[in-house]
Figure: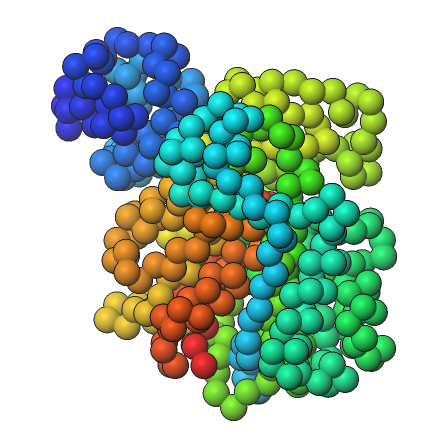
Length: 78
Length: 337
């Protein structure tokens, strides 16, 4: 999966317009990335990367790009 | 060895209905938001003076009357609850007395939550299989609502109060299969009431309210849930649990269960587990829309609901999976009779 594809998947997970998202968007600034949004993103990463991202690791992510690289690393460690 | 089967299930729901519309006025989310996030549109709430012993007694009375059970013949009463009337005596003793069960009836509480029905069934089945007892009742009852801060959306929207009663008896044909259980106490803090026990007694300090990062208000006296961490636990643990239960009951491959009966944690959780495990939607039991997450009562309430709807057929294999607070989990196969 490319970074651009991940951004679209991320936008789909939190039900927002992918056009409004870039890899350097700060997760903390996204109102849709609330508690429910986090669950949806965890689910998306599990289904797309086969990686159950730990909730505390997800909490430490600052941008969508950083999350993408984390998911990629996680999928290779599974 | 003897076989153990479920002879019947009855439920009790408190009168008070808390709808999403009502909740919406208090917590800010729209009714549609609440339904989308939880899969729940209403839940039942115990009255201020209604406790677990009251609810469990009513569920058990329904069971005894409807199934024409002889109370004198009941050998044991297991009450699964995490919200007992008192520290002591065990609430099962109060229920035994109110039901007029014989003094030779073994009665005790079993403190488990979302896995509690499976744990209780496993103990009941062991009693019967060993030949020690012939029949008894498993009760589940909880009033989590009494532990929830009114301004904590994360749990107030999810949990409902309920009680159930299940008749377990010796049978000629196998009903309950082999059990798989498990525990990981490292997850204890992710669903917890920190104060109110003897580790941290309720006090002025414990009742001090605070807001978490999501804007939910609670104190140490209230139920606290870390939703994402619990979700992580379920994604990691439940598929493996399901596989191990199937394997230990000689199922799997071409021989799949007819029904998957998960603990009804939330609509979202059910859907994610179903998707991850590639289970057809029509094989999954859903029963939380109008009752919410009723902790150890979710599985028996769902079984009763589907029985009333005529969905189960005799001989069908049901995979029962309980998981959550503790962390604790358990599963078994129930052959429908």
